[in-house]
Image (cartoon, rainbow, N blue to C red):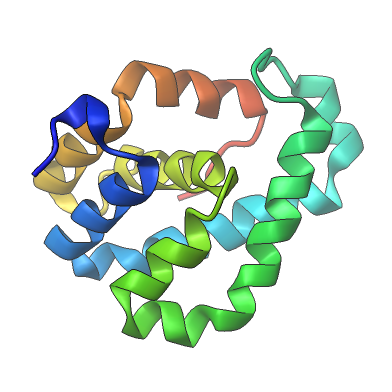
Length: 139
């Protein structure tokens, strides 16, 4: 296995999904909800946007890509490889990592999932990303 700093987001996502396959559905549901919100509420999102690393428009483009990938939801639920390939393709990994952090932050899947996700995706950086998008998950 590679060192943590050598893992790509796709490798990190695959590791988490292999360890906690039950979270895949929650990540997909969260990704779809966050993506739909971003696409449908561009003006509102822009008002609250505080992320200097990615623009609202770039986030919306990623959201659109995620929504397009959702047509393969059944395939992604059946195959971890397909899930990781589609959800982490290119810059989608940024969006998907954010969704993993949202699911982990909700504490619905236990402390082990939360700890592994925070360790792999970098708790502080991802929390910053979540807080700067202006979108809050409603649990």
